[in-house]
Amino acid sequence: NPYVSFFLDPVGAALAALSWRDGQDTGGWPWDLQSTMPNVEDNELFYPLLYLWRKELPDSGGAGRYRGGNAAEWAFIPHKTDKIVTSTVTSTVAIPGPGLFGGFPTSSNKYQLVRGADVHARLARGEAMPTSVGDLGGDAEWIGQKSFNNEVLAGDAWVCAWASASGYGDPLLREPERVEEDVVAGRVTEDWARRAYGVVVGDGDATAALRTQVLTERLGHRPERLPVADPAGRGGQPLTASLEVVGGQVLCRHCGHDFGPSGGNWKAGARRGDVPVAETNPHLRDPGIYIDAGVAARHWFCPSCGVLADSEIAVGDQAGVWDIRLGWADTEAARQL
Image 1 (spheres, rainbow, N blue to C red):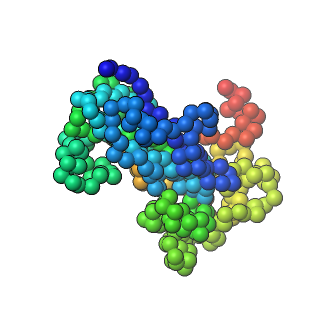
Image 2: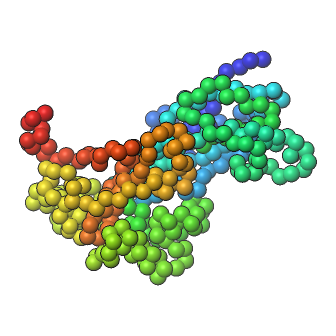
């Protein structure tokens, strides 16, 4: 009989990092504690589908001093039915959620329709159950965030992943032992530990050298002072994880660099670096699949010590965001407005 329903698997959403702790992997919806992620077996009992996998995605959580929670992915095929028709109504497909105070962004929502996967025939031949899109064969199509009447036929597979949570603070400030714990637990891969956190698992000297190299590349020169996770600062008013206000000036809490008056945009005194957004999370795709405008991860570094003080997502030729405006109501710009 015809039926209509919606998938509740994404209720196992990731929780964002906080200023003192990591986010929770597949921790659920914090705004609706009564909603729960369904059991695979329950969905297979009620609906004509067969799950191929449902798994957490290592490296998907936003990197940072405190790591964002990892997301998950699942795939199914129609079972004892000719087809299942799906629709998608979502966001965060081309543009991820930004991190906070230097944290890296989320992964993005993903929908794929794999034509000609023919899993039933493979299982009948005694082949192993597929565990990833690469195991399916066939032709994979990217499905947009707003789509309708996607026919998943008996020989096809539907793959979906939901967005993760963002990170908090510069990933280079995360303690190496915490990164290594994540690698051992399978939450982070060794490759991403190197690329995002500057950590060489099991080698403290190599980690220190790699992090200094990353800071040098950020600045174009070797920093005179390396940033630390918990700087003492200059006794001013903390502004962010890496900034404080002392005597009406915005200073770096790590090295004391002066970014300028607190009434202005501190980013004018920072070093800027733009990179393709896909380089900041292994589970991000080329936004060109979905939109025409380019998407970049815009990083703002302290010009003296190289700490990543803030990051944002820039679409097209968008200017930098002036997001912290202390005393803005007393400025000439505010009076003119």
